[in-house]
Image (cartoon, rainbow, N blue to C red; front, side, top):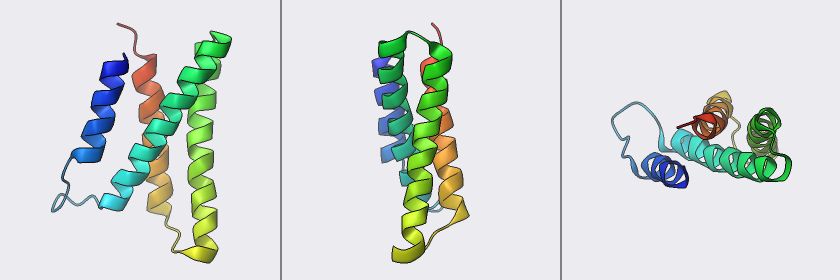
Length: 102
């Protein structure tokens, strides 16, 4: 499972998407939230042995970090709804990959 997660993260970080219509910024948001959600899921599951709780916490923490980043960007950058959408996609992908049972 750890190898699969690492492979997905490396693919998200290393795939060249120039000319594909997906800005690198959105890939960075998705990859970051993917890592946050998988780390939170893993920690929560290790502590509670509850997959449902781990899924909720993993997704919620990843999206909360994304929202916090966009709130920061209101005064220090350029907030975008697309960034928040990428955060949601990354967070959902992270918890989904870890919920897959082999």
